[in-house]
Length: 361
Image 1: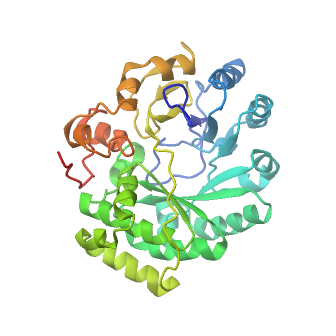
Image 2: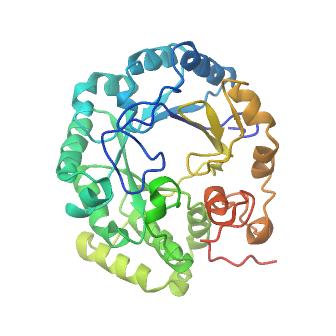
């Protein structure tokens, strides 16, 4: 797919309403929907905008808040399907999953969040008992033949949980694991990011996880792709890893035994603004949900025009970055987290402060 012409993924924040109060919520979700949501003809017009990207059409990810709290969700899904748009949905784990399971069936692809074992997950989600409900729903969704991906936060508060989570997901039958490295936006400002060395260690650990047959992806850690490239045929690349890599990997092997397979890492080399675009509940367009830099509003101009013509997005896609990211030999397959650069440095084109790599100039 040519990311100059169209994104691979469009994230649409259908609503800020959600019954949960997660500690890291990017959207700072609230209990009731806001009046300025895209509704009626505006919502359908956005779907028509997506169709205007042409073949191959982007994939539309319905998110929030909790997208299941949209009263017109059925109409949105039906209209998008008529336009030939593939979709995924990222609901909160509440009783709405059972109430609207037929609609999730129709969408066919769902991502469910799991951030720890037992009380650790419940604490992050702000909902006692959410861990056991999440496991029940994961098993139910898999029985129904729905494509299920699990999303997991990566932060100081839960990084030690990763080996146990890997085993749990494999035992349940999950085969796609996407890990979101914390960006301090929304309510996430109260949680703690890993150090650059710890980020590197976790990325190397995730290579080990993928050797057990798990497809591993990362969000806001595109340097995982650089680690994957370095690791191809060079096991000694782990010699510069720190104690976190050792601890996580040893724990993983104690739970699952030595890995037998090759790394299972696939990527389309997307990053914020390059193959990815985000539309907020009120039509504001950002490079991603974690990079709230306003690029325009779909109420004022088409999403196609914003994506293709915005000068900031053009620079992101051309990898015109500052600092180490701008001279790095991996800038086109990685490019650093634009959201983290924006969050930490106030400049979406600056270098990613959580990458440890020093480019070979």
